Image (cartoon, rainbow, N blue to C red; front, side, top):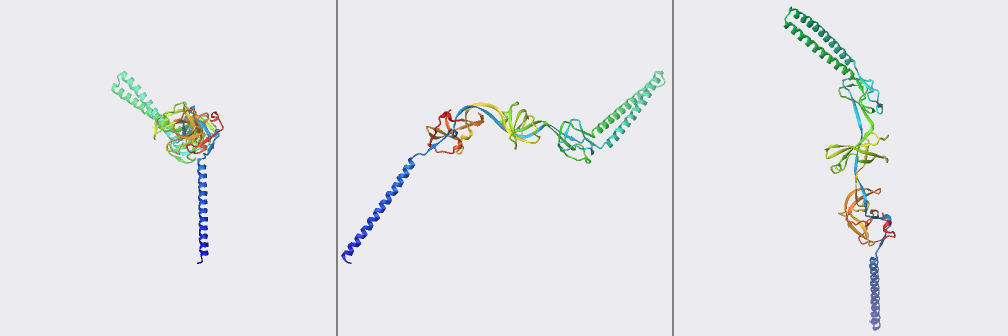
Length: 378
């Protein structure tokens, strides 16, 4: 190789090495600048702007305590009309929804057999009465003969015993007649209470046995809620306490008052009976639910929505020195205060500013700003 070519090749290699070195240094500077910019961005704090609607105050309020109740609505007065004698059902014309009054004749059971028994019992009573008359005349005659000395006193005693037996037979026959008359009266089915027919169990012309259910009558003028309470809630409930109820599928509210509490627990529950205010649209068998007011307490409270439960222990996001702090709290009774649902809490000083749950979870130490004074917080 000629010398000039060797020098040219060497110069070219050196030029290429120099260019590569320059590119490598330039890339390192670019990466370092990007890292510096990233670090600077991380050091820049993000500030969270909050409004008055995002913040709540820890306040001492009178908390109305309530017990959630639910159960079926039942009529205080209901009655079944049953057959008291067997036979064919006749003249049954009332149907579900018909109104009836107390004592109204609703149906009859074929009285043919009962009429025959009444006649038979009456005839037996008449025959027994005739035997009494005969025994009385015999006794009177024998008493006169004894007085005259024609017969002994033993014959008089025998006559007296026959008279007593005849009277006893007549009394028994008369009782049989009364029983037959009662059986005849039982063939007429009457309404024991005023109300409306809710169920018709048989049809006219069917043969019914004794105690067969024929009709059910319900009086919707006085309705009660049968509420099932657990052991803890039952200790708070007293007669006279008021409740606010609503029916399934209806936005209307109904007032009710505790009038009775069952003295015994069944299946670990205690039944309380609440009398409902008269309402035209209420019916036996509907389902109602609501809250029973059982008392008030004064306590530090927060809206229940401000308490977070995404950790093992309930906590709140409190704002202190414009930064978020996670503070564990202990929850107490729940209730209504100032028209809103709140919960009693311990572990926070009164007047603390807490972030409402609608804001979402924020990291501890997050900077927050608000242009509103503390008195603008709910």
